[in-house]
Length: 144
Length: 220
Image 1 (cartoon, rainbow over the protein chains, first blue to last red):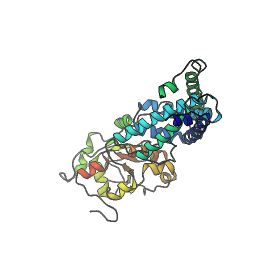
Image 2 (image 1 turned 60 degrees about the vertical axis):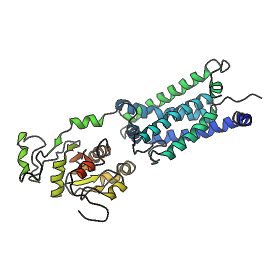
Image 3 (image 1 turned 120 degrees about the vertical axis):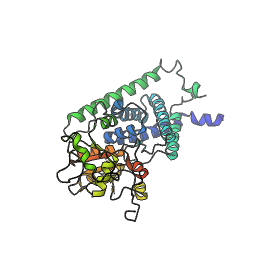
Image 4 (image 1 turned 120 degrees about the horizontal axis):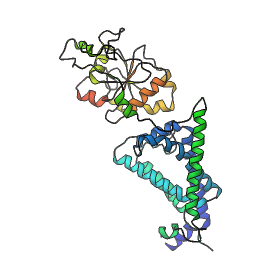
């Protein structure tokens, strides 16, 4: 356990996790920006937020993802980016689980509209994997 | 462990973590809003309206094409249109006996009995907005399949759709299924003038014991 902790809190592990999470977020953000209309439609399908606010979420969310991705990749405010990414992924995973629980058969929209993966357990697993990466990226590096 | 590691300790440059998160959200939102603003200003328009329209609420305000009397019980159900002859219930001159699906620049809503009249007369193109596997299992006779997901990725499907001069009726899985509604709006946007949405969808049709068509066979 102590050894695992040593590995996870090594500055190298943290940096690699930050960069990988950043690249994934940049990809996800850009894919959504490329098709805002489709993304808004997918937000609507989740039925999680009031209809009038859906477009505002579609307008800002991909760019927040993209800025967080930049922070992670370039190591500027990288920890803030990683904590934000962890939070966002947590929200996304809850959204997917809620959709599953309500039996909604919808597209995830996680990586833009070209990602036709439907909401399901595979998606939950995928999300948790990236969540783990982002979480490690948000750890504090041990000193010395 | 997580709390301890993620906690904002004093040496994190005085709440720098929270400030960083707020900063990222602010910069992101600002960029998003600017990008959308340019999108709205741009004629080719990738911009989204700031406030999303609620299509389900709009549906309630939609004109409804309805044949009020059941077809089986009445030999001449079309005489029910006299309540408001100027409205969309008026008979279409090209299809005497059918309630008209008017060209209003937006979809109208159509009810079961009116759909039935159109299906019996073959006077409309029915478009099934459900997924191909659901469509293959059973569908309203004569319907073609145009899953909303396919349309989103290939808009040419909409423009090339040939209804043979007939109005188009979209339907899907009923209930809260809005794919038929979204598809109807896309069809109108693609230049089809007379488009109706059948919100009861396949479940209502099926429960009314009306004929259905399955993969590889004709009308039952």
